Image (cartoon, rainbow, N blue to C red; front, side, top):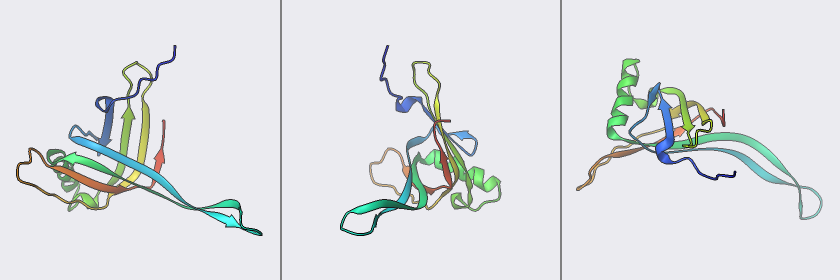
Length: 139
């Protein structure tokens, strides 16, 4: 029987610094590669040339989760989150009992962080851009 049931946000697990992030509000990660047409005679391309790969994304956290990660970095003698380098494990678990799909974001670092607060806000969400060294998918 065919079932196209997708994994829901509630069934996704993200682990950073050995800690499952319960205060996560979003995650994005992408792999891109420079590509351009190769031209020879005529006006049509004769191929596609490939160049460097880059890996980047972002994590959105609630402030309490951000603070916990900062505490972990400080315990390891870092100044702030920008001093940390590690891996991120993202597990997608369907409710149907099938095996989870896991992506490993290898050698990530936070690029920057910015805190902000507005009148009437009920919580603080912090978006942290990341870069990383590699991606293993569907482990």
